[in-house]
Image 1 (cartoon, rainbow, N blue to C red):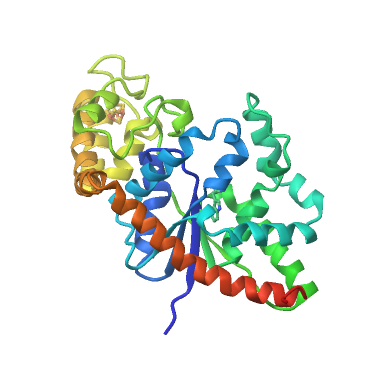
Image 2: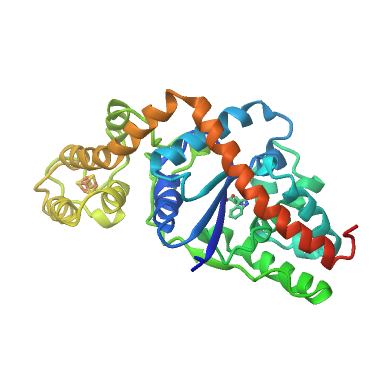
Length: 329
Ligand code: TRP
Ligand code: SF4
């Protein structure tokens, strides 16, 4: 019996934070029980924005892989690999570029948004326009049945399905249309109340020490109505409470909500309780991380082995693709 296959990818941005964990990784770990999983560190995608300063990419790949292993991605069951070690992704990207109408890429909402947001970099490049097409190649080269991603990636998966239909129309049925497995992610705010993000400088990292975590939570934004300990508050508008919903068991959430509304507890009590549960969730992962941190060679070895496995699958697909496009010699 073969299990359905999924592929997902993450850019090597460096140490992962709790938003990355709750928004993606935790789900990826669970999916290993049901699916044949391919998880890719997409270093070429990093170069679409960081081409002028690629010096961090290699270290970041190791950081991400170490956090993946810490979180419980299991190299025995899942292919954990590096995009550029499977160069067939680039070949498929090239061949897909032949059949991709330019407007399909220009109308992807992330294209113009990111160009405006990241104004300090020149993203008017061929590579950046092709970002979602490279992502399509990542997915379909494994004939993935489904792709676990957040809501923001939906347009990229939709583009992938359109490309698959166009390819199959021209050359015959080679690729299945991948489904989106939406990660129903809880809101994970950073310490300033905005979405947790490395670029906002408001992140709590998976590898932060207990002391660092307590220090980051101490000044964290709460319901501004709670000026004094005796002022009642509203947990529904408090980012600390969002974190309780992600990390604390239900009875603790109820305790925090009731104590907040009645001013029975203070924000310091509330944050201390949160820190306790957050640290308990992170403890087993941090223990695994220390183990892998001590032997980076083994982490690289895992990625190289995973890339070999992924590459065998990708090569088999490319053989079919070349035949379908009449360039198998
Ligand atoms: N664009 C994705 C992101 O920013 C990363 C990515 C690259 C990806 N290739 C992928 C995700 C393939 C899923 C499948 O998060
Ligand atoms: Fe937020 Fe907790 Fe303070 Fe209420 S008691 S405002 S939920 S930190």
